[in-house]
Length: 83
Image 1 (cartoon, one colour):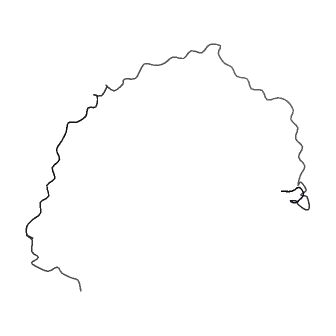
Image 2: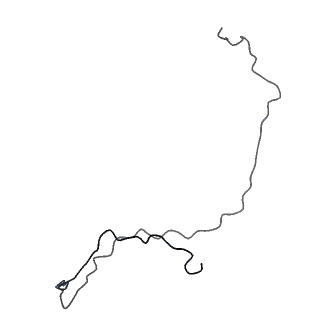
Image 3: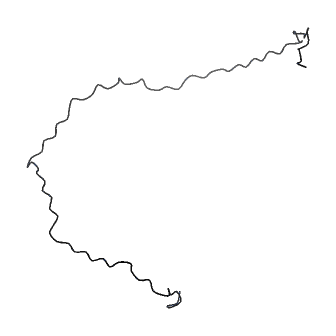
């Protein structure tokens, strides 16, 4: 954008003037030991090793569908229909 094209008129006036000053220093004291010792507890009991996976042998699939030759159930009494 060319200079001077975007201008805010009148220039905004700050609502308040803020003056901040910092004096003193932030100091934090931490006490640590010269030597640190880390101890690991006893090893937890692990689950036993599982047997190695093996490929299953070849199988045979059989699909059987039975279809009745005739309809065995006969509707004797008609269903009641509310009036």
